[in-house]
Image 1 (cartoon, rainbow, N blue to C red):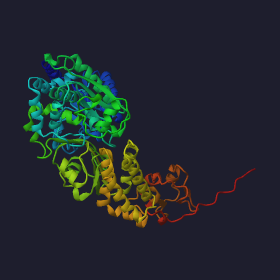
Image 2 (cartoon, one colour):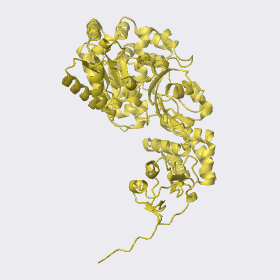
Image 3 (cartoon, rainbow, N blue to C red):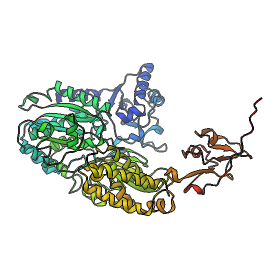
Image 4 (cartoon, rainbow, N blue to C red):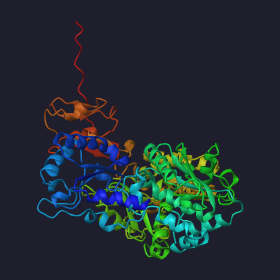
Length: 634
């Protein structure tokens, strides 16, 4: 199989025809990749150009989607990456580059107009500072073509595994130091060893792809871009622990990931990589797909099992642990997508190789979806131990619009909010926990100086409170009261005693909750209280929001000295007719009608900047609306 796949790839690479690689993961499709593909296809036909379009997954530069890499051997240039390729740009590149030989330097990611050198893909900011283990093939292979994966060495680790023993495979994983990438960081080799020793021959392997953190999309992207590496990891795990059945638990809100993983399973079965007598061995293993309904709590493994069994997804007391009595009371190993996708490279290159990446206590790499107030948001895979400063500023471009950094929230909705003093903290399990945050599954939200940490805490508490399964009193009722206090603060109704109640109630919820959701839900509150106390005291004592994010605590008004006489832009864009014209043709804002959407401030021409924003609201000067002219009833 691999010989055939490699020959197909060699023929594809050796063909003198231009090759157009288009990213077609969810991020690319949402940005218009389907239209870009159609434009390339139409332009190639119209101009009579023979070229091949190769559909790939996400390359990680989500801020630049739709991303296209053009490999035009006849031009003499290396493969070139183009960002934000809309249909018009696709037509232009077909005409000027594929036909005319001009690569259009000004449209190349990472190139400058005054530099004739075209950077290779690996020289771009992002790639040249990453260490790609899990995402190595993402953006390079067609996720819906198993031969692309085979040609890149796919399933070599499985073949190696089948020639070894379960004990040897587990020993290699233990030696690598791989820890669970779903958030808990439990040693993967230890979990596998416990499962191997568990009583019973009918064991199960579950891939946990129930990714529910706001702003996190690492697992989804891996499934959409390289599903076979995840399947291969499941196969190796199954061989090591003695399982015959597997399940991919993926949320139904990921329709493309569901489609791609189902197709990958079918292709693997056709080639004898799943099912009976895999690769002519005595190893039998099959994989199914279960679509979850989107409950955040089902990321917890016992709640996940309850969901699969048709019950309400609610965590259970442990022990027994799933590796002893899991799905249908059978020994069950549950690993995250990133954990399983790390396994084939470890088996192929050795545990010592993997341990050489990252830090001593957290070997390997970490994948983050970096979002928020950052110049280059997207997916990044870095060695463990890289500092937050390097990731945010050097790799992701820092804070846009010349704003100052204020905080980074790491670890999903239950992660901690860390200030600038912690930017040199190494990114690994132990260092982040010591700082008051946590690794989590890899979500990271960067915040600039215009962010209110009280409102951020309210936002995340609103999410976790709604996602609580309701089983624990501390989680069900405690998070509700935390949220109510935070709402009061953001509405200017907070009392000094509220701050002490926030602290005490958060500690009680951490101590009294059963599962990780409840135990970590107060983290944003605790860390923001500790590191951003000034934000809280301003809301309580001065009834103002320093970042001017909390709507009840802000007001908009128009500076009449700056306002242009006769400009009606702000009045025309106001959705509630709060903006009015004064007697001298300047504008005012009716505070009783204003919903504080800020559209007038955005619309005001930059040469005037007449719309002002203040906190607290009473600082806005009152401008009387002129009386309505009498109606003519004749």
